[in-house]
Length: 162
Image 1 (tube, rainbow, N blue to C red):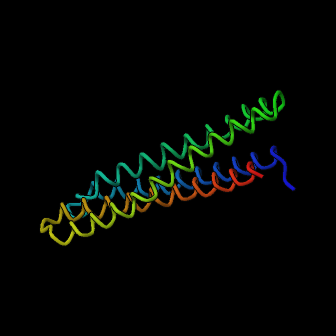
Image 2: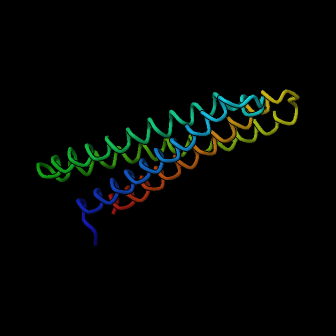
Image 3: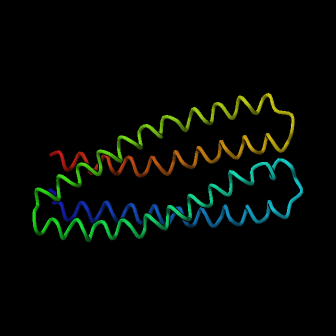
């Protein structure tokens, strides 16, 4: 059986790996964004704002995750040394809250994709079509990112409840 210390280290390691992947993908989107800026294609120009948001989310939040998760582990393990019960309760509350919010967000992303795809059928302007496609891609990426975080919170929560 894995103990609390091992589990929190494994959780943080997985979170940090996802944060690094987010940064790499964010840099790739940044390169695409720079290419779009040089392009005169209206469909691509329409996706500029959603792609900018994608870059900000992936690089910004990915960096935050890398920093915050390692700090969180240090703080929680220090608390665990003082009071195991208190550390476990705080960790349960944290993961329960993250899981609940993540599940709510994960239900909204597919709805946004469907709405933008339906809107795409009624728009004639390539710029507006690019906007819809960009929002759909943004929603798909947000879903993938949240899925990783939610699934790890669910796993950790299951461990803490045993």
